[in-house]
Amino acid sequence: MLSQEEKAEIDKELSHVPTKQAACLGALKIVQAHRDGWVTDEGLLDVAEYLDMSPDELDSVATFYNLIFRRPVGRHKIFICDSVSCWITGYKEILEHLHKQLGIRPGETTPDNKFTLLPIPCLGICDHAPAFIIDETTYVDLTPDKVEDILKEYD
Amino acid sequence: MTDTGMETPLTKNIRDDRTPMTIDEYERAGGYQAVRKALSDMSPKDVQSLVKEANLKGRGGAGFNTGMKWGFVPMGDDAPQPKYLVANADEMEPGTFKDRLLMEGDPHSLIEGMICAAYAIGASVSYIFIRWAYHLSAGRLRKAIAEAYEKGYLGKNILGSGFNLDMYVHVSAGRYMCGEETGLLNAMEGKRATPRAKPPFPQASGLWGKPTIVQNVETLCNVQHIINNGADWFRGLSKTDDGGTKIYGVSGRVNRPGAWELPMGTTAREIIEEHAGGMKDGYRFRGMLPGGASTDFMIDEHLDVPMDYGEIMKIGSRLGTGTIIILDDRTCPVGMLENLEHFFAQESCGWCTPCRDGLPWTEKLLHAIEEGEGEPADLDRLEAHCTWLGPGNTFCALAPGAVEPLQSGLKYFRDDFERHIKDKKCPWR
Ligand SMILES: Cc1cc2nc3c(=O)[nH]c(=O)nc-3n(C[C@H](O)[C@H](O)[C@H](O)COP(=O)(O)O)c2cc1C
Ligand code: SF4
Image 1 (tube, rainbow over the protein chains, first blue to last red):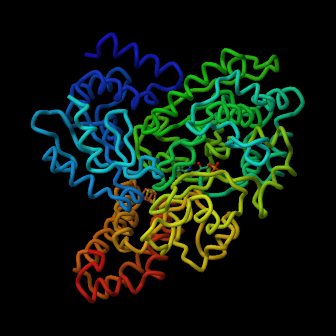
Image 2 (tube, chains in turn blue, green):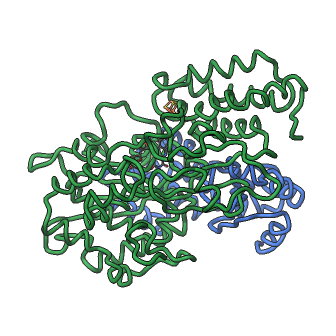
Image 3 (cartoon, each protein chain N blue to C red):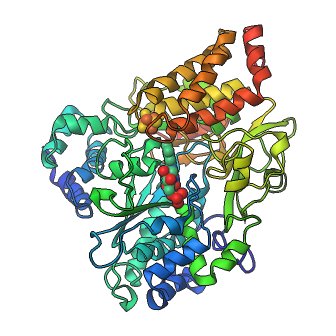
């Protein structure tokens, strides 16, 4: 069941679009934010019912997008840019360093559930490559030393 | 900030640290004058004609005349309502970061351009479709929109003109195809971002079946300046036939990667050497993608070609987004292409077979060559893909764009490909 809070947020999305379906991605993001960062089958069914969509149709939409998570994720998500400008300026070195420090490869979560590492296409910060985003914070001009300090900020 | 701003209308308000102007500061700098002028002195058709005459070409990559595009929107009392305007702020083309500069640095400029454009086509609802990664831009835009409502530039009966416009920020759930204009419409409707068949064109039947214009952020930011200063002034900003200035950018191994507003038609040599500070010590220029991942390579001999829509086309590439990605001599061109085709293969929406199956195949072939497991016939296979995935064989422009760097890479860096195959290893490792 959707919580009152989730419903209120979804209703706000619904207020500026003419169909219920148009709010579905917003609704999935809301549910994901309230429920450990990912959309469970139950969460999907809740949204489908509220927006009068079939669960299958909603799942086909949910799985199309990069930022709707249908599998468990850690408390913090590291979105590392794997596109061309970062690749040229040292993406692989940063990726290796993350592996050394956290023991995870792209798509994996640390055993303490702290970080999930996710490769993501170009973040639009190519003039300060290589770059990654943790949750909603952008880090640029990365070097292995910098990465070490950045990771310390999270718990 | 420059002295007068007349030569750099898009960036004149942008501070070095990109802290945006408040609405009061923006108004003091001449902001929202174009909205006043358009709404009181001009008809929607007047705005359309003026923008058409200015030859403002779409800055999202395709380069279509903006005023002409607006001309296809049904006007008058019996036109379907509501009509929609969408600012395309998806900016997921690898190597592209120009719209972010405009939105972070001067959010009111996009809003003012959108109000003028919405007036020109009679739209009453507008959305800014922005990629998720641009948290800072989205926040600044939301704040600026609230300020504009408060001052009466948005909402009902704007400045007493009888014109109504609402504006919302819509944050994407992420996928390159959301930037394709009809994929974007499907994404906004809560569907998979696959493209739609054209016709009908969005101008006639777009969002929820209503007339819709989708326009790139940089395109929209020009509109108010054309209204304020006229079509001749705008065309005069350019060094070539395509009107206006352009936000050019450079990424890769240069001394000062960044983005700059320069006259349309500035050469790559000037952009790279004067503005980006030239190549970093120890790196030599080998080639460049002139406007994002889906444009053909240019090499040394093309550095003096004016970077505009028409001139670059003549040498077999495209201006695209105008943000240059540099290939240096210490970077393997085969590896770079493998990275590019990985992106395109991953972001293909899967709607049509040649793209869905062909792009992963090119990635595999490039991977094999890069790992020293390629064979000479692989080059023919790659060439064949460039033909099969070229214009006319797929539903949207993703696949043709994907093979642009590949076909030109095969042409200009042939020796490097052959060396990988002959030596059975990547010479850069
Ligand atoms: C795969 C793909 C992705 C695109 N991504 C963008 C984008 O992120 N931003 C953009 O403005 N145009 C993008 N375009 C171009 C749009 O389809 C469309 O031409 C453009 O938004 C129109 O605006 P303009 O005329 O102002 O350039 C993309 C096209 C394709 C085929
Ligand atoms: S060309 Fe590719 S991205 Fe475009 S519709 Fe076909 S499968 Fe989808």
